[in-house]
Picture 1 (cartoon, rainbow, N blue to C red):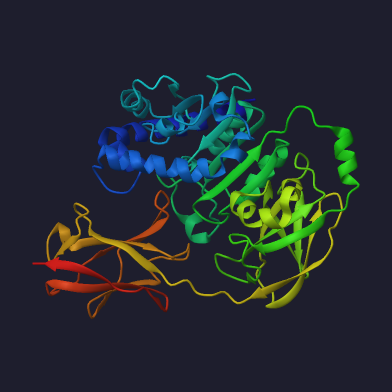
Picture 2: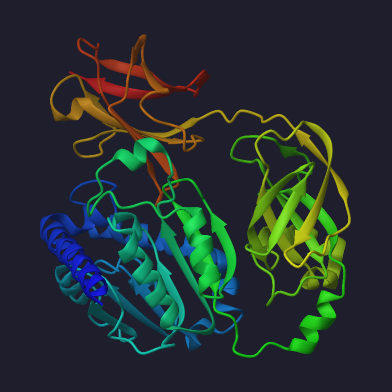
Length: 468
């Protein structure tokens, strides 16, 4: 009992530091600390970022998150709501939205900002639990870019368990964590900005302990790991489960995970993942923890098991018709070491059932050429750069980079000069990488071509205006 009380005191002390630090950040520049796009963002810029994330994280998968129920009938919890960046736009979709945050100052600003929105409630929490809510209070629980700032694995675990407690039967919980397991990240001192890693193995273990359904886990091993779990309905038709278990799963279709029209699967790179459509699975029984994909002589854990997504539904409706509604979509990464050429693939269920074997073509990865989306000075985001002063610092927004991009493998060509960037970060709200740099000394003013190198891949050049 003494050990338990001591652990609770430790968590409360960490939570106190979280509360203090986020109150300070809210006083200083809440918008920047929530949406690290630039300092002193306008309300329009900040608001737009909330719209983008709600569209990308919620509306793009609305039928899955709502379980095909009317969104206006659902009560949603937004964990780590800040000043209501996403909460405001969630309220346009769902019947009732409750936002919580460890920072009382964030909640105060959120109440001012969202004043007049009748279906929103906002509460300050202690950072460790959700004790202000009774069991099974919400139909959907969301948490975006919050746990990445929590320095304690135990506090993350406590919040996940509490979110599970307040979720109703049949409800969905979608959340994001850091999932890095590299030695470099492990050696970094964790605080209330750089949070603790919560790796894939721990996520899968927590889901099993809760007897939850792990529907999706994307981004394992990165800073932005997104997990979607479902709380099983209270009653499952056992007769239907038994009948379904007697049916051998059968692979009906296989393609690249992000493109149903592409049947060849890369053996490495960001597109080295496959989607398999299978008949004979029970959607209430099986999940990412109970399904493996056998590729040649290697096994890969499923990272998605659920209904057919909108992209596949649109592409395959004419081919499968009504049968498409009865199929389950499974996605898994291609294991390292998979050989190019034709190879056997099948689905293996935890209870021992195995699907038919199908041959799939594996190919070498095609390099993605990075592209510059915008170049702006870092002082006021203006399109003009200057040879000296604050506006000689600039940033480049780039698409086509991956998680390996850093200051070690990125270089910038400014005219004839090659320079090293000061910082390379991924901006999730925009789906782009931001590269920060300083113009080289004695740069000549005028229209100047700027391009970037990612390893040996060079982007097309973009012309920037440089003034003295």
